[in-house]
Image (cartoon, rainbow over all chains, first blue to last red; front, side, top):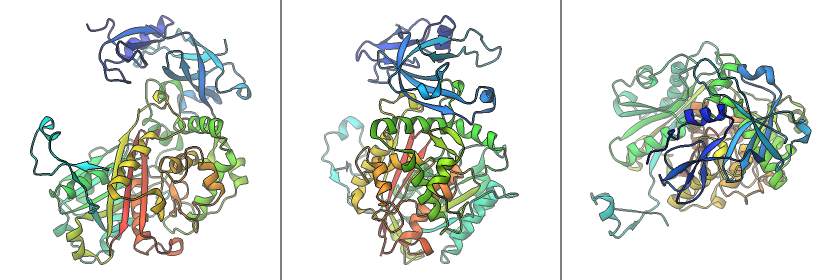
Length: 132
Length: 414
């Protein structure tokens, strides 16, 4: 049965607009894949269903960006981290409102969502991470 | 033991599995008979095609028995981005400028491994027998644009919807590898700095290098932060440049040179495009797999390597390359640089050319520039940076966040 909505990047960001991080869970290996897609990135199975990631995860690694691309220059310096959620799924994003010296691998972070949706492609509302 | 099936077995996959496999001998995959590299640097007024001609002319001059137009029957060119010169479809353009029309020409792209995979394609062409002598190289023109634009174009090799969209930069990706590596293995910023210091020392001895200037650990640590823990001097250079090799089969090679360099092992593997999708951020899995294939194919161990060129796009990448290539155990890369093992004069000199850090990193040119350095080393033409008696060499070329990895092994021919 094809999933509704389809497991696409566009669907992922539509869920972000509803303040949800959504991945797909594999019926065979039980692992979660984000970004969502048709083929399980862990075992290649195609029997997948939507699953919501927990709102909290742990910081796997991080950096502080000082030299930023033009569209992010106003934010620099800013922290970027990779966050792992309970199911093993990982996502990168900005870590906001944490002093750089307090960043620590393993720290708990919570997802928050931007509500503004850009007018032109890509119309993807951003998520970010902060301390709970 | 790597095994393949006889080429004459023109059978489907299901049938092949019941056929007795045969051992692969260490017969060369292909043979380098010449190599050329343009001067790397900010080559104001020189465009990609002109830089490639500069590299090709050096390769042609080094091989007087070669009549390029008469002998060369294929061209492979690695190039990452159309954006710098607003120029796509570069293969016919390069073929025309080097005077090889109408040979079939291919452009390959794998970010910073673009010419590494061009070499793979050239090896397939030679090994299959469909081509006899090919020119394989790479080129990138980068300094005609502001640094911010070059950084943006390079950043396109990371995942757009999840990395670029959230403000992750390319230095940021390698910085995240460094943070994780430092936390897990105790690797220090000083150890990262030592990679830059070593490669700058080597660059002083390479007249083709973008920078010929020594730096100190203090200089690296005091340079401005780009993406913590990486600072400006932890990053490779934005450069213009081109490089190429003349590749043929081992039999024909004898007609062109008395000092052939054989490619005896070749491996190529992929990892996820996005760094975040990997289970282990502290190791380069694609490099490990590519190296395993190359070592098995060439019947060569890491301890046999006399000289290596590895992909030091950022200092942490060289440390992680040591580990993935088996020069040391996982996590011991920092100690290897501390112990001077990879210095010129050490047990495994790495990046004698100056590496991407000092020689420069015109991304499309890097893979075949590494091979060119090994060619010079194994034929005794490396001048002041010559590793005495070098017989076996290795190159490791990665693309993006090490999503593409190509490892090649070389043996001096006699």
